[in-house]
Length: 252
Image (tube, rainbow, N blue to C red):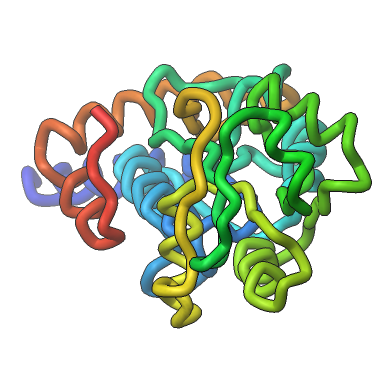
Protein backbone atom coordinates (compact mmCIF):
# COMPACT_ATOMS: atom_id res chain seq x y z
CA UNK A 1 0.00 0.00 0.00
CA UNK A 2 2.84 2.40 0.87
CA UNK A 3 4.49 1.73 -2.50
CA UNK A 4 1.23 2.51 -4.29
CA UNK A 5 0.85 5.79 -2.37
CA UNK A 6 4.47 6.65 -3.14
CA UNK A 7 3.98 6.13 -6.87
CA UNK A 8 0.75 8.11 -6.77
CA UNK A 9 2.64 10.95 -5.09
CA UNK A 10 5.44 10.86 -7.65
CA UNK A 11 2.95 10.81 -10.51
CA UNK A 12 1.09 13.75 -8.96
CA UNK A 13 4.27 15.82 -8.68
CA UNK A 14 5.21 15.14 -12.31
CA UNK A 15 1.65 15.90 -13.39
CA UNK A 16 1.60 19.23 -11.54
CA UNK A 17 5.02 20.10 -13.00
CA UNK A 18 3.77 19.34 -16.52
CA UNK A 19 0.55 21.28 -16.07
CA UNK A 20 2.42 24.40 -14.90
CA UNK A 21 5.31 24.09 -17.36
CA UNK A 22 5.61 27.05 -19.73
CA UNK A 23 7.44 27.37 -23.02
CA UNK A 24 9.46 30.58 -22.84
CA UNK A 25 10.46 31.87 -26.27
CA UNK A 26 13.52 34.11 -26.38
CA UNK A 27 14.61 36.05 -29.47
CA UNK A 28 17.62 38.06 -30.60
CA UNK A 29 19.89 38.64 -33.54
CA UNK A 30 23.18 36.75 -33.76
CA UNK A 31 25.53 38.15 -31.09
CA UNK A 32 27.94 35.37 -30.26
CA UNK A 33 29.18 34.37 -27.67
CA UNK A 34 26.17 35.84 -25.83
CA UNK A 35 23.67 34.19 -28.14
CA UNK A 36 24.80 32.11 -31.10
CA UNK A 37 23.23 29.66 -33.53
CA UNK A 38 19.90 28.23 -32.32
CA UNK A 39 19.67 24.46 -31.78
CA UNK A 40 23.44 24.06 -31.88
CA UNK A 41 25.84 22.62 -29.33
CA UNK A 42 27.00 26.16 -28.57
CA UNK A 43 23.91 28.41 -28.67
CA UNK A 44 25.57 31.11 -26.55
CA UNK A 45 26.27 31.44 -22.86
CA UNK A 46 23.12 33.45 -22.07
CA UNK A 47 20.99 30.89 -23.91
CA UNK A 48 22.61 28.02 -22.01
CA UNK A 49 22.09 29.82 -18.70
CA UNK A 50 18.43 30.48 -19.51
CA UNK A 51 17.84 26.87 -20.56
CA UNK A 52 19.43 25.54 -17.36
CA UNK A 53 17.68 27.96 -15.00
CA UNK A 54 14.21 27.63 -16.47
CA UNK A 55 14.53 23.87 -16.86
CA UNK A 56 15.29 23.64 -13.14
CA UNK A 57 12.09 25.63 -12.55
CA UNK A 58 10.05 23.27 -14.74
CA UNK A 59 9.90 25.40 -17.89
CA UNK A 60 11.16 24.93 -21.44
CA UNK A 61 13.14 27.55 -23.35
CA UNK A 62 12.95 28.04 -27.10
CA UNK A 63 15.36 30.42 -28.80
CA UNK A 64 15.28 31.81 -32.31
CA UNK A 65 16.95 34.45 -34.46
CA UNK A 66 15.16 37.68 -35.25
CA UNK A 67 16.47 41.05 -36.40
CA UNK A 68 17.00 43.27 -33.38
CA UNK A 69 14.33 45.86 -34.18
CA UNK A 70 11.76 43.10 -34.80
CA UNK A 71 12.82 41.28 -31.65
CA UNK A 72 12.25 44.35 -29.50
CA UNK A 73 8.94 45.21 -31.16
CA UNK A 74 7.50 41.71 -30.92
CA UNK A 75 8.62 41.18 -27.32
CA UNK A 76 7.01 44.49 -26.44
CA UNK A 77 3.79 43.33 -28.13
CA UNK A 78 3.80 40.00 -26.31
CA UNK A 79 4.41 37.74 -29.31
CA UNK A 80 7.60 36.46 -27.67
CA UNK A 81 8.59 36.24 -24.02
CA UNK A 82 11.96 37.92 -23.98
CA UNK A 83 14.77 39.62 -25.88
CA UNK A 84 18.30 38.39 -25.15
CA UNK A 85 20.97 41.00 -24.35
CA UNK A 86 18.46 43.84 -24.10
CA UNK A 87 18.88 46.99 -22.04
CA UNK A 88 16.20 49.08 -20.29
CA UNK A 89 17.04 51.88 -22.74
CA UNK A 90 16.16 49.66 -25.71
CA UNK A 91 13.06 48.15 -24.12
CA UNK A 92 11.85 50.78 -21.63
CA UNK A 93 8.50 49.06 -21.07
CA UNK A 94 10.14 45.68 -20.46
CA UNK A 95 10.40 43.63 -17.29
CA UNK A 96 14.03 43.13 -16.27
CA UNK A 97 15.67 40.81 -13.73
CA UNK A 98 17.83 42.26 -10.98
CA UNK A 99 20.82 40.18 -12.11
CA UNK A 100 22.59 41.31 -15.27
CA UNK A 101 23.96 38.76 -17.73
CA UNK A 102 27.11 40.57 -18.71
CA UNK A 103 28.27 43.93 -20.04
CA UNK A 104 29.19 45.33 -23.41
CA UNK A 105 31.34 48.26 -24.43
CA UNK A 106 31.49 50.54 -27.45
CA UNK A 107 34.71 49.65 -29.26
CA UNK A 108 35.82 51.00 -32.63
CA UNK A 109 37.09 48.08 -34.71
CA UNK A 110 39.35 48.86 -37.68
CA UNK A 111 41.65 47.09 -40.11
CA UNK A 112 45.22 46.73 -38.95
CA UNK A 113 47.29 49.27 -40.78
CA UNK A 114 44.68 51.99 -40.59
CA UNK A 115 46.11 55.10 -38.96
CA UNK A 116 42.75 56.30 -37.64
CA UNK A 117 42.01 56.24 -33.93
CA UNK A 118 39.10 57.49 -31.88
CA UNK A 119 40.09 60.64 -30.00
CA UNK A 120 36.76 62.47 -29.73
CA UNK A 121 33.28 62.45 -31.19
CA UNK A 122 34.53 64.85 -33.86
CA UNK A 123 37.09 62.27 -35.02
CA UNK A 124 34.20 60.07 -36.18
CA UNK A 125 33.53 62.48 -39.04
CA UNK A 126 36.79 61.26 -40.61
CA UNK A 127 35.49 57.71 -41.20
CA UNK A 128 32.54 55.73 -42.51
CA UNK A 129 31.09 53.90 -39.54
CA UNK A 130 28.96 50.73 -39.36
CA UNK A 131 26.50 50.04 -36.54
CA UNK A 132 23.63 47.64 -35.88
CA UNK A 133 20.11 49.00 -36.27
CA UNK A 134 18.19 49.41 -33.02
CA UNK A 135 21.16 49.04 -30.68
CA UNK A 136 21.69 51.34 -27.74
CA UNK A 137 25.21 52.80 -27.90
CA UNK A 138 24.76 55.43 -25.22
CA UNK A 139 23.62 59.02 -25.45
CA UNK A 140 26.58 60.53 -27.31
CA UNK A 141 26.88 57.82 -29.95
CA UNK A 142 23.12 57.49 -30.39
CA UNK A 143 22.95 61.21 -31.11
CA UNK A 144 25.87 61.07 -33.55
CA UNK A 145 24.33 58.12 -35.42
CA UNK A 146 21.01 59.96 -35.69
CA UNK A 147 22.56 63.25 -36.84
CA UNK A 148 25.04 61.82 -39.38
CA UNK A 149 23.20 59.38 -41.66
CA UNK A 150 25.62 59.98 -44.54
CA UNK A 151 28.56 58.79 -42.42
CA UNK A 152 26.86 55.83 -40.73
CA UNK A 153 25.69 52.50 -42.18
CA UNK A 154 23.05 50.81 -40.06
CA UNK A 155 22.87 47.05 -40.59
CA UNK A 156 20.02 44.75 -39.60
CA UNK A 157 18.89 41.20 -40.25
CA UNK A 158 20.69 37.92 -39.61
CA UNK A 159 24.43 37.31 -39.24
CA UNK A 160 24.96 41.04 -38.87
CA UNK A 161 28.30 40.91 -37.02
CA UNK A 162 29.84 38.71 -39.70
CA UNK A 163 28.43 40.93 -42.44
CA UNK A 164 29.79 44.11 -40.87
CA UNK A 165 33.22 42.55 -40.42
CA UNK A 166 33.05 41.42 -44.04
CA UNK A 167 32.37 45.00 -45.16
CA UNK A 168 35.32 46.15 -43.07
CA UNK A 169 37.59 43.62 -44.78
CA UNK A 170 36.40 44.74 -48.22
CA UNK A 171 36.94 48.42 -47.44
CA UNK A 172 33.26 49.32 -47.73
CA UNK A 173 33.41 50.84 -44.25
CA UNK A 174 36.34 52.20 -42.25
CA UNK A 175 35.25 51.36 -38.72
CA UNK A 176 32.77 48.99 -37.09
CA UNK A 177 31.26 49.93 -33.71
CA UNK A 178 30.95 46.73 -31.70
CA UNK A 179 31.71 45.12 -28.37
CA UNK A 180 35.29 43.85 -28.38
CA UNK A 181 34.43 40.32 -27.24
CA UNK A 182 31.67 39.99 -29.84
CA UNK A 183 33.82 41.30 -32.70
CA UNK A 184 36.89 39.23 -31.83
CA UNK A 185 34.87 36.04 -31.25
CA UNK A 186 33.30 36.26 -34.71
CA UNK A 187 36.55 37.42 -36.35
CA UNK A 188 38.29 34.33 -34.98
CA UNK A 189 35.59 32.14 -36.51
CA UNK A 190 36.06 33.97 -39.83
CA UNK A 191 39.85 33.59 -39.73
CA UNK A 192 40.47 37.34 -39.73
CA UNK A 193 41.33 37.93 -36.07
CA UNK A 194 44.88 38.99 -36.93
CA UNK A 195 43.59 41.53 -39.46
CA UNK A 196 41.60 43.75 -37.10
CA UNK A 197 42.29 45.79 -33.99
CA UNK A 198 40.65 48.22 -31.58
CA UNK A 199 40.98 51.92 -32.41
CA UNK A 200 39.50 53.21 -29.17
CA UNK A 201 36.40 53.09 -27.05
CA UNK A 202 33.68 55.49 -25.92
CA UNK A 203 31.58 55.55 -22.75
CA UNK A 204 31.28 53.08 -19.89
CA UNK A 205 30.23 49.41 -20.13
CA UNK A 206 26.48 48.85 -20.36
CA UNK A 207 24.72 46.03 -18.47
CA UNK A 208 22.88 43.40 -20.51
CA UNK A 209 19.77 41.48 -19.50
CA UNK A 210 17.00 39.34 -20.85
CA UNK A 211 14.19 41.86 -21.23
CA UNK A 212 10.80 40.21 -20.72
CA UNK A 213 7.55 41.27 -22.34
CA UNK A 214 5.38 43.83 -20.53
CA UNK A 215 2.35 42.26 -22.25
CA UNK A 216 2.78 38.81 -20.67
CA UNK A 217 1.53 38.32 -17.12
CA UNK A 218 4.23 35.82 -16.10
CA UNK A 219 7.13 38.12 -17.02
CA UNK A 220 7.76 39.29 -13.45
CA UNK A 221 7.87 35.67 -12.31
CA UNK A 222 10.32 34.78 -15.11
CA UNK A 223 12.57 37.71 -14.21
CA UNK A 224 12.64 36.60 -10.58
CA UNK A 225 13.40 32.98 -11.52
CA UNK A 226 16.27 34.14 -13.74
CA UNK A 227 17.82 36.37 -11.06
CA UNK A 228 17.63 33.67 -8.42
CA UNK A 229 19.01 31.13 -10.88
CA UNK A 230 22.05 33.25 -11.76
CA UNK A 231 22.84 33.66 -8.07
CA UNK A 232 22.50 29.90 -7.52
CA UNK A 233 24.68 28.96 -10.50
CA UNK A 234 27.34 31.45 -9.43
CA UNK A 235 27.42 29.91 -5.96
CA UNK A 236 27.59 26.28 -7.12
CA UNK A 237 30.17 26.87 -9.86
CA UNK A 238 27.94 26.04 -12.83
CA UNK A 239 27.98 29.64 -14.06
CA UNK A 240 31.77 29.55 -14.38
CA UNK A 241 31.60 26.21 -16.18
CA UNK A 242 29.25 27.60 -18.84
CA UNK A 243 31.22 30.84 -19.21
CA UNK A 244 34.51 28.95 -19.57
CA UNK A 245 33.07 27.11 -22.57
CA UNK A 246 32.84 30.46 -24.39
CA UNK A 247 36.01 32.02 -23.02
CA UNK A 248 34.04 34.60 -21.03
CA UNK A 249 34.88 35.80 -17.50
CA UNK A 250 32.29 36.37 -14.80
CA UNK A 251 31.31 40.05 -14.77
CA UNK A 252 31.16 40.21 -10.96
